[in-house]
Image (cartoon, rainbow, N blue to C red; front, side, top):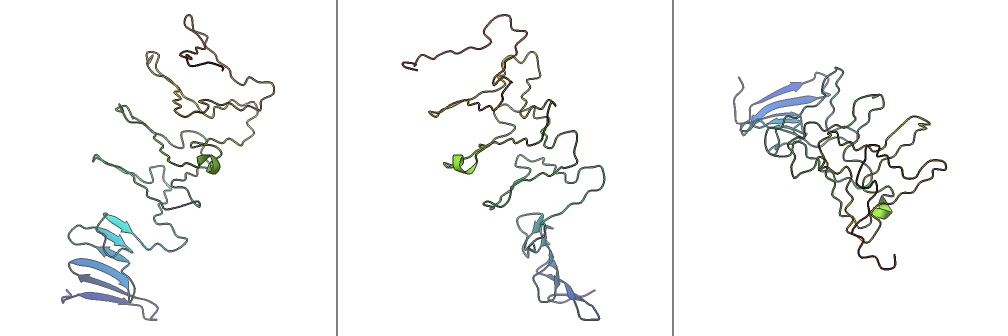
Length: 231
């Protein structure tokens, strides 16, 4: 037992290259290299752990002061199991990313060069949605056209797929009785094209519609064009 105002245990290497102190202060536990900011702090009242953070009051694990070139957190998983699992039972955000990057990095980057099947990004069991969305993208940029030539959402395919069938975007309404669901809705409030197609095809259709089971109604219907005067 070590007692005192700030009880301390020092680990001193015989060659003098490093000295580590373990001590208690204000009911908190600290581990630090002598003369340096605490490397590890455990708060007594909350059990919060700080790595490089001497006062981890905002999170159960707080990491600060990451060295240049290092990851803030690295998980290496060699087993066929989930590398990181978040089980959020409260009515709040499960993962919140706040990035101050300007033009040098993505907020989320997924690199899967060996994956041949399954999905790179998958949302499952979103069956309770009524007024929300599975994916919501909000952008207030007024200079988007000069900064992102591909648009707010961009899909690029740069492989020579030749005759292999590839759909860069597939929307599948997979229920025969879901007659109230529109596969694609474009709501254009600005005075600009709602849909623009730029095709470099030479021997294939620019627009192709297949509706083999349609018996009534119209395959293509244009309605409410009541404002036309000279167009």
